[in-house]
Image (cartoon, rainbow over all chains, first blue to last red; front, side, top):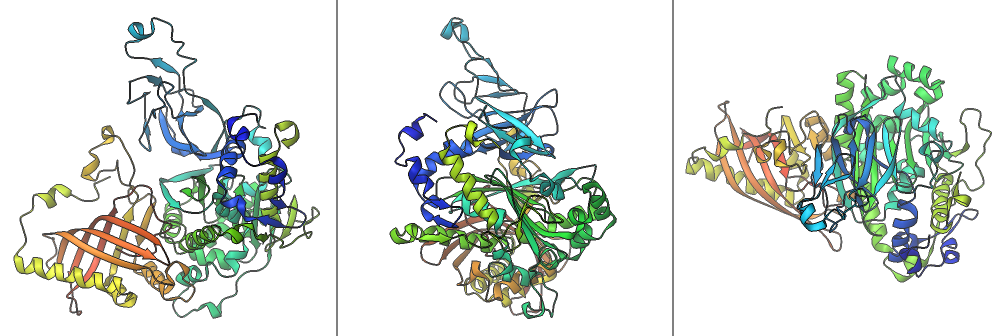
Length: 444
Length: 191
């Protein structure tokens, strides 16, 4: 990592290692608001990790493209003639202008709007205006093509990684695949996207959001979302009449900082978010039985409910609710949230419509659950401006030392549903990505 | 996919009768006062039982994908796709219930808002007791200590005559916000 960001950083590795303690569960709030740490994150976390860009269904046909980001780097995701995918920096190598400026579409070529350098859909520079006159055959067009990233998919999800040395996506996902499959592998048909990418900016650090989806069932079961729950209760039923679920588990990936949590056999939260039709679809319908057969157990097909999950660093989703998002960092104090919805591709039309409707109602910019997350995160971020507030240790100790790898139903390192072991796993991996120079020591 | 709104029809329509124009504008000014003075229950009571409260997502698309400003599929998500809002009476009642909750952190304490409504154009409707009305809005939101958000856009309403105090109920409201990426931490207010 002998690069500018590292050379210029005021943070020595030993200091970074003091920001989080996995054994004690203590966290230094400067990880959320320090400019110099953020610059290191862009290089050491976002330029070395697998980042979710979208779903295969976003780019079904040759030339279909999605304009998106790896960290703060704009990239183009493009479907190729041979059905493979390419991801390359959305940057012309002449003066750095974007090659494409619309959100998505279908292209035969990407022509820079500044001086007209033209690129084919694989990202190769193929034509330069007045090339003979200006360059006299001296321009090696391949050499001056945009930077290419690695691309890999898992269950329809498309990830990209700049780092040639990083482990494959398969290895990167470590032991958490069974917990991803509860959302993306319920049927032979896989998932499809409900059209439309929702984007919004929240002035808060990206880790507040990513860690919450990784590890924080606590906020849902206690305070944050009580009014969201109220919004979905039938007439005449009040918060006093309902029981917030408390039985379930949390999983911390053995490598990689990924994590998930869920209730078991307690549909209360899922019901409050998605209503009775979807709750029945994912827990009791014939399609739910199919999912159980496919996933190998009723536990994974039907009995885990209200699941939250993060694939480190910035891919999060909620199985059963089916919102999926990438937390694109925009400085230490800002996230650009990209959200889309998936459904089982072979689900009945009325089920697809209900997933759409309930996601808009609950987990969107105007959603009755999401609204209150936005409120909490920006207030947290503002507090960290304080000199004392940012240096005071924060408590990440729930379930400390309580996890086991011997759970009868769930593989991997398992704690209680109101544990923070997955958060500790998230921050521990963040710490390793920030301080370990290469994959010799970082690898799974 | 048909266009969301036939904007050419609105542009070419003849001006409404002065008294009717006055009546509709005064309705909007009073409706704005309800929202800006946190009279949530009174505002939600203006939504008729068949209310469709809808705000699609806007996208950046090149011209070649269609006549962008004519509201064709290119710029706006369609009714099968994701949206910021797509609510009926039941879900709007749920939103009211959230607003009135002691635990509604996004609006408790409440935002200070100012809804300014202008550019009101009334066009004919097929139904005798309803009006199609296009308007522009600027909504300023100031919240807690220093948070400021500005929401600007266009509304397309179907207003239905009513014997309520303000003379109309809102049967349909399509909100076209002039943002692609939403520049606020949430949309916890109404338009």
